[in-house]
Amino acid sequence: MRRADSTTLQYVTSSSPTTRHITLIDPAKQDPNTAANRAMVAVECGSSMIFVGGSTDTPDEIVHATCKAIQEAFELRAFASSQDPDSEEEQWHIPVVLFPGGAHALSPAADAITFMMLMNSTIRRFLVGEQIRGAPYLEKFGVEALPTGYLVCAPGGRVGEVGQAELIQPDQTEHVYSYALAAKMFGFKILYLEAGSGAERQVHPRLIETARSVDNLTLLVGGGIRTPEQAVLAAKAGADWVVTGTLTEDAADLEELRTRISGIVTALES
Ligand code: 1GP
Image 1 (tube, rainbow, N blue to C red):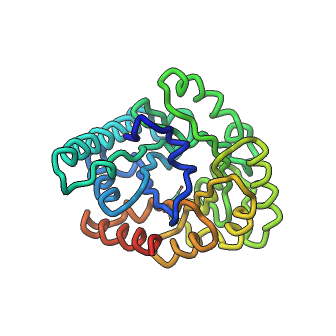
Image 2 (image 1 turned 135 degrees about the vertical axis):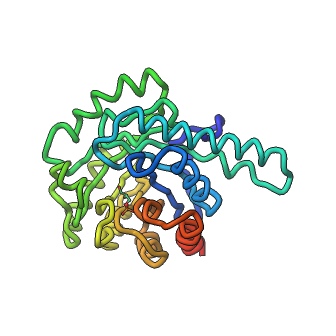
Image 3 (image 1 turned 120 degrees about the horizontal axis):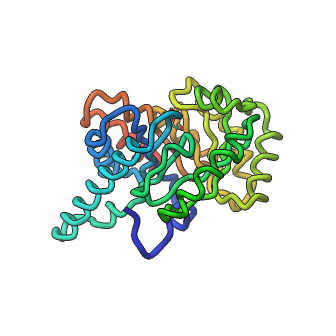
């Protein structure tokens, strides 16, 4: 749960000396209790934000139960830390943000939502349709919208297929530059360069560098990042945030998860 004295957008777009890490939890891939345990490990290891979402067809109830379980776990940990002078309460005040596959995957328990236009989709539904369906819900429940341009790069994976995206190829720097400029002109504050969950290749650093050359956009990069070296490659190219998801889901247990996330966060911080 983020602190009440700033918005999630301020938190996401604030400058940081190093690239920060987001742990993506897909509610379709584990029960809410497991999701909360994984999210706690992620925060202990230095993840600075939790995304909840990913799959395209998860119903509201599952997404909501997952957000709620994570928020309750963080609140308990924040309270426990507040009673312990050696512990950092602040660490537990990080946002839990929806990363939706559509207007069906929402929850009032989230602090915010990446309110995205899949900019290189060829179908109206992902450009503006799902957003129109979801907007009244977000307004009603006071879920903060983070204006985000979402750009699927090759190989693109399932999101590229479902979203019928014209994938950005590694050599299409002019494309990524145009998209980044358009994102800025639309007033989006965030640009998310996505290679697809579980992608064999991460977003090419050349594309990240090009997007970076457009000012006033906070750059999120994800898809196919599994090692500290890959995370550092994205960071050096200019990512403000690195997102990992699959790495959490296929860890054998919480200890393996701890090793994996710590490795990435330590590499990003050094
Ligand atoms: C997917 O970018 C995220 O939307 C994370 O991808 O599952 O490959 O880490 P991975």
